[in-house]
Each structure stands twice: as structure tokens, then as C-alpha cells.
Length: 462
Image (cartoon, one colour):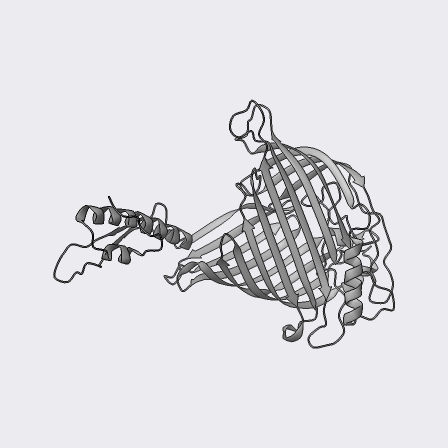
């Protein structure tokens, strides 16, 4: 019988062993299969060859120049087209768009890629983006990227248009079951195109700003089908540091967000195998911490284009887009601290069965979005900011959050998740207030709930 092969052995160490011919042949076959699978996976992740990729590891013929430890590698591949052009439509959170894309593959023979994209959407008037990425040291699991963008987006919930121009550089790598991303970005932002009835808060933040920031994120996605999970879990955490110390720019803050989702299948008596019934829960939370700009000693108040927004069909259903948290008149002006959660029961439609991507959904969700608590004359020194952040986080647990429940129809398309829900708000809180730069408080209004039908479209839903 052939001996057991240590999974840490390389093909060379295995072939170096001295056994009888039959055992050696069996070992070679086992090692061939192991090495073949590893090489195939690596070549597929490079993204430059069509499937299938055939890789064989074998011993060479005996001749005067060969040694017992030599091996032969045979690769059979078909390269993908160097240039690809694509036009179509795509869906993002609360938005659909039409796009044109040119993709240049394997530019310099090292699996590099250049992507040029132009899009026009329901909220994004125009968006142009170019990215260049390449594996580092020929490792498909460790990649570098540089990119640039120019976009113009309508933000109707806050009566303005935001124009962005800038660039970034990123490193991406795979860990043990997780994806990591570390990047730097420099973005020039402009709050412009104000509506006639734009609030004082929006007008106070109008104009130009530059954000210079470092961002790190880690994602672990173990769901069986991310858009309509039946089992598994998902976690993501992101931290961002902007404007502090040598980063400069003209906005400064620390920002942290966490997101999680879990799904479990529910067996139904009398139904063998997958019943298609599942229970999912989701949670999101975030904190924005004011920091001094550069090497200054005083922190800065946050701006409308950096704050969190909450409410709408992709997070807290039963509320309008940006309907939770501080508002000024009809404008949702965002908050610095938020938490939101959801529980969903999904069942297959009668006669369609669990194999089809259609589900009936019953849900209850809720959340809170708060501005930092400050007195009108309070200075933004380190101690006052610490007290303000601490008291605002504590306020999240003061009373029930804004909540809604409902029932609806879900369709898990390969590119996006579609929902049509009937929602009934259960708890509606007052939105809170925010301190303006001229020491005037925004008005305190009731959060903007929405009873009735609500359509949702997105790739990441609570």
C-alpha cells in the first residue's frame, strides 16, 4: 500500500522519496491531482484564461540530463480576448443606470487590466471612471489598483447636487476566508445646484471641500447566495481617517462602520430537503468622530457630504430615503452616529418552489440616526468632543428606535435584489437637531415615515 502523503509536502519532496515502483506511481498520481487543482485555481483567479484550464504534473523521461527530483509541467490554456467592450444597464442601491465599458486585459503580459467606464443613472447624472489593476509578484490574491473618477449626483433628499473629482490607490489581498482592502483617496467635492428651498444647513455646507483619507476594510462573506441567502453569515467592517496630521485636506474625522448578516434555513415537517424557508437578521452601525484638521488643536464639525444617511428601501424599510435622523425643513442633513437592525422571514412562492429566486418576505426593522450632542457655545476641543460622542452613543439606547413592519415580494436577480413591500410604520421618533456653523440650531422635525407600497432595488440590503 502507498504511504500517506503529508499535505504540506511539495511535489519535489514527495517524488524524492525512495519507495517501490507501484507506491511511487500512486504517490505521483495523488500529488499530480493536488498540484493540478492548486494551479488551476490560481490561474482562474488571474482572470486571463478561458475555462477549462488543464494542468498536468508528471515525471520526465529518464535521460542523461534528468535527475530523480525533476518534474514536467504541462499547461493547456486558451487566452481571453485582450479587448472587451460592453454596454448595458446595472443596478445599485436605490439607483439604476446605463453604462458603457471598455476593458483591456493582460496589457503587459502580467495579468494587468485597464477598465474605462461611463455611466448615466436615475440619480447619478454622469459618472466617468478609469482603473488600472495588476497582481503583485504574480500573486492573484494580492493586487494593486489605481483609479480616477469624475461624477455628478443628484441628492434630492437634501436639495443639492454633489460633484466629485479625484483619484485613489488601493491594495487588496485575501486572508483566511476574508478579503482585505487598504487605500488612500484624494477627492475634491462640490455641493452645488441648490434647490430654491434648500435649508440653511445645506446652504452652510455649499461650495468646495477636499477630502484626503486612508481607508481599511475587511469582509468575510460565507453566505450561500449573497442576494437571497438561505444559510451562512456576512461581516464587514470599515474604518476611515481623513484630514488628520499629514493627510491635510480641509475636512477631518475618524469614521467606523460595521455590518453583519446571518441566515438560517428552517426545515418544514413533511418537506424533504431544502424547504426554501429561511430566517435572516441584519445589523449596521456607524460612528463619525470629529478630529483636528492637520496639526491643529480644535476639531471640526462634520459636513453634510460626510455624514451618515439612514432610511429607505435598502436599509430601514417603511421610511423615505434619508427619512431618519436630523432634518432641516424638508432636507435630510444626516447624522454622526447610527444603528439599525432587521429581521426577515422568507418563504418560497406557492407552485414555484425553493429553486426559483422568488420569495414572500415578512419583516420588521428599525434604527436611529443622531447628530452629536453639543451646546451652542461649546468649543470643539478634545475633551468636549469626547463628552459629546459618549453622550450621543448613550442616547441610541434611550427609548425605542423608529420601527416599521411589513410584507412583500422579493426577487433575487443575479445582479441585484428587487423588493416590493407594503410597510406599516410602528414607531416614529422626532428627528433631532444639529448645530450650524453660525450657532443656529436646525429645527426638530418628525422623521419621514412612509405607509404603503415601497419599491427597493439594491445589492446590499438590511
